[in-house]
Image 1 (tube, one colour):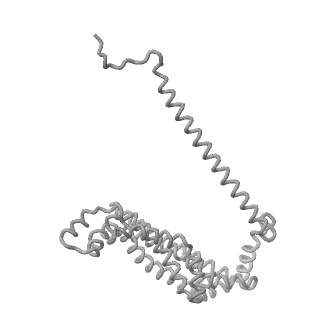
Image 2 (cartoon, helix red, strand yellow):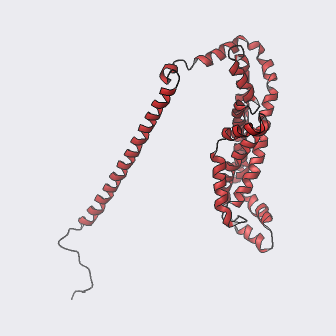
Length: 297
């Protein structure tokens, strides 16, 4: 006697029908996704081509007409620098104070930005923020701070404060605080909250919980990100010199704007700048690797 509740396969529909329906639906979805992706890619390509054509039409002489002359300026700089190569050591010492100023700008702005970014990160991390209701506001603030380029902030500050290293320090520090705040917050979200809860249970205040319960866990990552940011800020401080923020960038702009006759000075500044960036890049990478190995050991 058969069980009336047992489900028997429908003899009118073969067992493979359900599988085929699912497979056909999946393939249709994949084809639809590919179609939408192709349309988006086509729109992107059309926008790129049209934007390039508009920019080329507004460019003096056109891009393709000037492309063949792209190597003329570097060739002039190198040829003049080679002719005046005997003066190169003197130029290196001449621009050494500007190099020190560039490094100082990067160091001070990194220090200020890291401290501000640390405070923003602690107030923007779930489970650690002193005011949990302010987390969205803090995160949007860091988004705005790192979204605005340093050169835009520096131009505004130079208009108000005048030229010099102070606008560069403030501009780089603001951008650094936004970027570091985001990185530090992501690291802090993965910490073990048990030490923080233990400190809270014995009456520790917010500062003590952060310094004793959070900072020991994240210190290697925080220091690694800070060193990486210092390396980035050296480049940024040199670039900001082109808008009057002092340092090597300012001297390089003067040498390049005068044209032939000062190309040997421009070559010396390039050598100083490249050597400094490579030196700090290697130094930063070495210490970051040591921190990573020490953390994993």
